[in-house]
Image 1: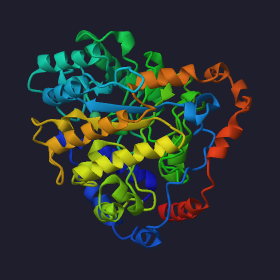
Image 2 (image 1 turned 45 degrees about the vertical axis):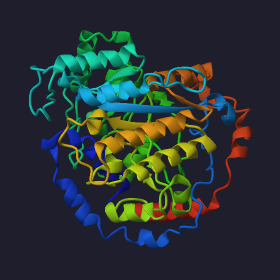
Image 3 (image 1 turned 90 degrees about the horizontal axis):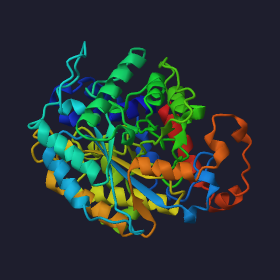
Length: 462
Ligand SMILES: [Zn+2]
């Protein structure tokens, strides 16, 4: 199985928890057929290996304007999707209410709402992927508005939460620009109806992380500033210390082209030029290697256990799609509370010693709801999952340079620190002077060992 298919498998499954009707049996088939092909990775991995040395900062991994990494805040973005349950919205808003960053600013989150929870859309035809039922739409609208008035970001996660394309082979069947326009503008209209100012709605995450080029054309047309659906950081030479920073789509998406090169049967065109629309990527989290486990309060052997649970897991790099569902659901890594906390803390610490690309974690408030009977992770209770996130947020806020703010504010900071000529859609910036780059490359330790691993991983992925 190719790496991208594996990612898509992970992405596909990320939101299934809240929609009991959408289990796709092909996911089991995929896992079943793959169970033998990756077993040799176990042998290749050496627990004494140090895979988290600071990696080389490639062109796209340098902080904006080639800033000295020590002067770059470590931004943390926690973005919740779907958000159809009142109790867990209240829980996280209550928890964040008095939380402050070390610079005194309020620590705040992002919420990407699927507005079908609030009201039905009678205009759609064809398949309605899921019913977004909620017990009390008015209470839900009130808590969504409360999130906004308390300084959190409210973003767009479509009206109907349908699949934008079929992950299982039919790559050509995807949403048209009209489909995107309808889903995104209807969601915006509904958010405005409940009291969110239209100009404050600038961020978008697509259901099941499914996207195509038309999405970005429509985001621009609708004055949306960013998407946060494209995964980043699965490159073999990136280990969590040197993930690429968010980027303007003026030159398309390098990582999307890479994904497509991993799956030649996919005839979808790669993402083209969309100047002014930014990608705030979804990054993997990284499970601690054995020699770090004790430091993070768990027994050695987490990665070995994870490989037993999920055959596509890369034991040498420890990466997991950076979403709550993938970490704890029984169909995926089934982590317990201590493992969730250790993985989140370790991932943040890799960033802090590396290039400080924003730490991004995607979650779903339905996964934190005591009223949602459809989500039952095997090794962690809902209350423990809440405690795990609370513990991580407290840990992050204890760090001097960490700033937890909405994605739209992280984007604003990046744009403010990006040289003016890089903001234009012209090509003149390709020759931008890189006078400071020497500083950054000094920080990037040579990582000859991980190069060996990369080769192994590349081979096994083909
Ligand atoms: Zn969703």
